[in-house]
Image (cartoon, rainbow, N blue to C red):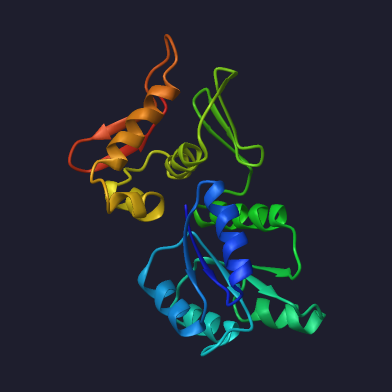
Length: 224
């Protein structure tokens, strides 16, 4: 999943960016509003973390312009203000959630996870595909009741495919949402990652769950 952070504090940029990357997210960061709006307009993000007090263009104006274009990406507002009026104003401008500074990184990660989940129309914290179960909160995967060991990035890739279960997901979409940095260095990063994930999901006597659609991409599809 790909997340944009628009925050002018270098300390928060570093800590939030590190926490998200450690959890497997691809992260872009901007320290001012005009650049942040340009990034939001030109890239396909699963969630945006947006500070209100920003140089060049404040967060609420950025949010208003972004929503005016009909864009529905989930936005989490960060602010030091904690009055009811401030929260209501942010939500009315189009924010999906609101977090007051200082905050716990664990809470921010949980809220970003919810925004990403909503992006694909899922309301629960559990995804299933046949006998494969994905617990998004615990970040745990089992198949036929047996736990599978995945890296953070492998978990995010599986989550992305499972969120779009039954749909063909192109290589370029995976590069954009998950592997955009690595893809610039190694053209077969997506193929290699899917191959490893498919091998980890394999279970004796059980059908494959991830299928390659030649020339189109990949689809996670349990047997009927």
